[in-house]
Image: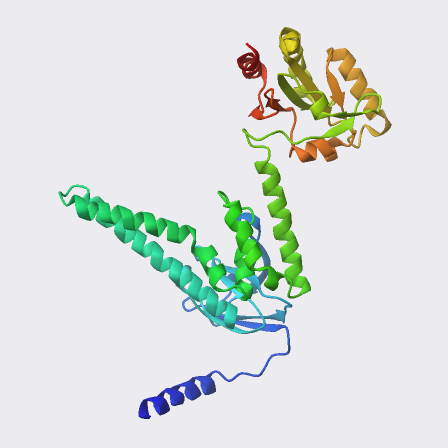
Length: 386
């Protein structure tokens, strides 16, 4: 009983110490202390864009080793604080309510954050990850020692621990999301993976499914959900263009306005060649493509030229320029174009953002090579047909 009374007394004392005026709905106040930072130093509030790049959206001046941020916000967002003269930045959750941050100028990642529920969870998330990283470093150090010792059993044990720890660190975010499906931070962490290198798309999609109820909770979350869904669609489209995948089917207008489908134009080997009359590198490559076509067409080579003519400075001359380039360069194969520049549906389907670009297909329509030019292109066609 005495222990319970003492525990309740501590809670009441802490509550009394932190009593602050209640903020209006959707309002935040971030109180930042910066011990040892001089007056006049600038601190920056940064948004974290796709890929982790930080972009400054607000600046504060440090006075008496402090500064305060006030404002309104509908839904929590990830932000980062950076301070002139201090290495690195500190990520926190900007959310309604009071958040107190104490910046450690010697190690900003070691700063203290005390705030509402999402910041508390973020602290837990970062603390657990830091613990894993420290353990990984300790294992690496012990491995270096054991490598020269005769205790093979201990060495193998450390290797297994290291492998399990790597898996745990790789799954750290997904595990957090699985365990906190109703927490706004989980959606922010999922969004933060957009643009990440080596993204596990299957795992990313499963996390999106886990957070479906949270995403449907309000309009702001639905907007983030749409952003995530768009990214999933883009990544799936990219994967469909990997070597070893069947080339996506398409149809497009030919020179006479008739629709031509890929399935009707394929040969024993097929080159899908994205080019344009205005594209200098494309026109310089055309003689090489003509040579390859003349050499291998009778053996089963087909070429489908997809023109990206139709840019703004061509206006009404796009089709005329396209047809003239075909005639001038002697391109005696299939040609299609919607004359919509890089908005051509086939170019968008094939994720083409620069030309010339080629996709080489085998007799089954499977992509066997991409972006080949010159001798490399001829060598690949020879490999398929000779």
